Length: 142
Image (cartoon, rainbow, N blue to C red; front, top):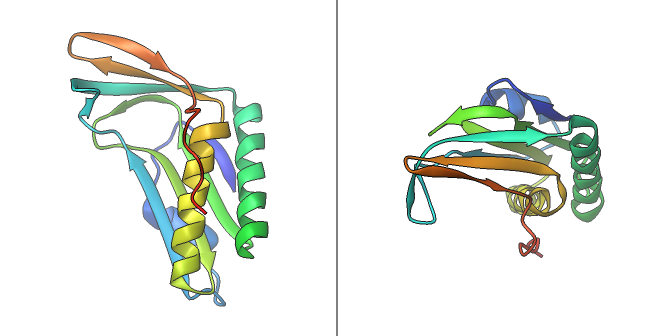
């Protein structure tokens, strides 16, 4: 499953999406809105995406993860809309035969998402706001 959503992301729901009796490890990553960025106090974040384009790239990441780590259960969700501090903006879950593979696959997926998925966020500070696009310098873990 790879989806852009305006609904809250649940770690439990993500884990259920990838559950597999052959998996010895399920890794779930949630990226949450923090209260600061660049030394400024964050009030909230606002995310925008073009779902068909973003979901196509998320699917590519899932395929990369499957090939690279030999997995077939990967879920990637990203929220759009205004999110408060503490809310999950992105969720990734993978099921793998062993824990190390699950951790590595999950990290690879979030690193790739930050680089290739066209999602934009507006950081809303106490004293202003700024739009930020996809990262261009993050390299996936090996």
